[in-house]
Length: 117
Image (cartoon, rainbow, N blue to C red; front, side, top):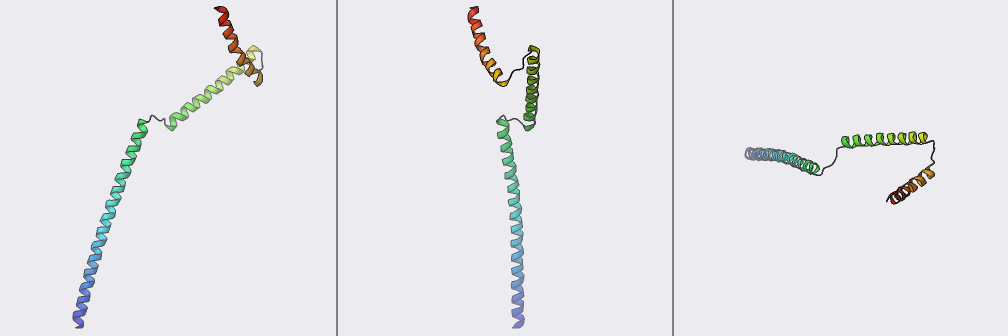
């Protein structure tokens, strides 16, 4: 009887190991499939985001930096020309006088236009 029990026990162990081995193969295959699906979803989402960004007319960082540099150079040039103009006119305007002069200038041009008519 011992031999029969041992044989039965060995048979069950072999079947159990085979079952576990089959389950491990299925799990590995399922993980591979899940991983593949994850990569496909990631690629589709990236493609859609790229499409939305292309349609929304956004500027790139490089374009923004170029325009910002141009604006800074233009600001510096304007300040340089204002200083040069002030020195040619012989005036050194203070910030308070400059604001007053700017407000008065449009009124003078408006009166000149009326006078010409």
